[in-house]
Amino acid sequence: MSPTTIVVAGATGDLGGRIATALLARGASVRALLRPDADGAARDRLTAQGVDVVAADARDVGSVASACTGAACVVSALNGLGDVILDRQSVLIDAAVRAGVPRFIPSDFSADFTRTPAGRNRNFDLRREFMGRADRAPIGVTSILNGAFLELLDGDMPLIQSRIRRVLFWGDADQVLDFTAKDDVAAYTAAAALDPGTPRILRIAGDSLSVRDMSRILSDTTDGSFRPLRAGGLTSMSAMIGVAKRLAPGDDAVFPAWQGMQYTRDMFDGRVRLEPLDNDRYPDVSWTSVRDRFVVGAA
Image (cartoon, rainbow, N blue to C red):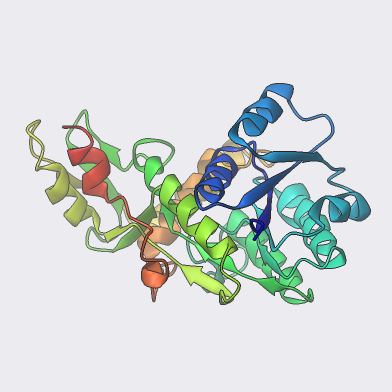
């Protein structure tokens, strides 16, 4: 029997590349959609992995539909603002429908934006708007929600301040937060793409813990004790977001400073918690915890 074909849009990106690799590991035939002017080195990297690279005009439904023909699922790992999350993904899902693809996984990899009000978080708003479009399309759609990427903890969401042995929080140090490593998101997404029976939403978290929990875990290292450090309340953080948007609007940036602040605030607010979790749906997917990344991994 020939392998199942999965189309991946955004395979030259970080998460998209990981999803393509995870699909190959599961024996899928992976077809990556690239713009005709895509970087040659990125194309070569995918081809060397065994990915079938197909050029398609991202603005043309017919061109993308031809590239999607025969696929069991289209996975979007596109990242951007309205021109990408709304416009390009709309072309992508319309093309999938035209090509007769039965299933579509949008680029919704985030905390649970279905529980936030409009106008509170720009990137959540874009995903919620596209969700409405996707739900009107005659195709099976599955959103995968994974909280924040675990890698952000010492990156663009630097709660862990190793130099001063503190873990930052806003509001309540006991508020539980959801994190998932990118490779784990990719592995789960690959399993879901090959599963014809997925529901509308799948919620996953590699680790769910509070800042107080995190401080205890990090204190297991030999480098010294970590303690929670309150940076302010949620009301003051909202005020800071407003100031940041006025001083550095960053309207054309995918992740300006204030967008990261919005994401952090909504996690500490608790409304974007992922419940119930669907981690056990694919038992062969393993999960990386905060301890794995920052304590065991550092040993």
